[in-house]
Amino acid sequence: MKEYIESNVKYERAAENGALKRVTERYIVEALNFTEAERRLMEEVSPFASGEFNVWDMKRVQYMEIFETDDESADKFFKVRISIITVDEESGKERRTAAAILVQGSDIPNALERMREQMKSYMLDFDIVGVADTKIMDVYHYQSPQK
Image (cartoon, rainbow, N blue to C red; front, side):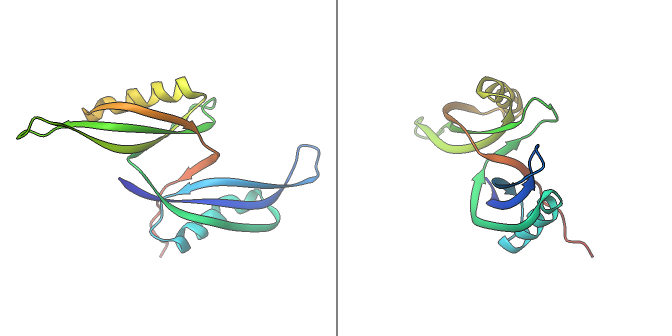
């Protein structure tokens, strides 16, 4: 499992009619600590902000994998909970391990199709336990500190 930081960002941005609109958006950041995650969010999101800008409600989350796509129609992220099935060679008993995967897709069937396609390379037996739409706007992956 990889550890990420999930955070909300509250800021004002120009709406389609030109008026300022206060929005709260959720992001996932691959970072070593909260300070680095906050810096990265400010760097990535502040160009779209006008006025007040706050990063809050930061928490660590774990995902087995994050599957993203360049497909323009895939504008949502879905949290897919799976149960990985392994068999203990000595006892022959089936063992299940819970895991979460974040998948970008246009809707639930599309996200599940993308996840199944990506999971073929893992050679794992698994059951899908649940799928949920999330409020996550984007995922920012780790960048090494600038020197």
